[in-house]
Length: 115
Image (cartoon, rainbow, N blue to C red):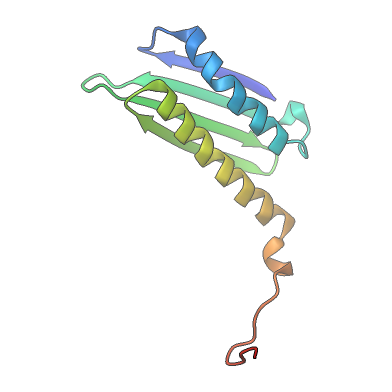
């Protein structure tokens, strides 16, 4: 996976990278099906100018599509956690759509009840 991170108005670069590392390892486990050189993850963390809030943006480029999410919080850890949890959910849903899981799901007949 190609990974890059951009900082805007944030001083603690090493601390943010340490917070991101465990989330990256979990994301790489979910991305085993894709070739590592075709997956790009770009992160941007910015501190809001007028209020004490951080915004963590993730852009995940895959061969089958692009996923985007934003996590906002009053500290860096909260914004990182919300963004990565959202992108993991999007990735699981995207992989299910690519596999055509909806075609294989069994439909219950309407009006009939088991009993």
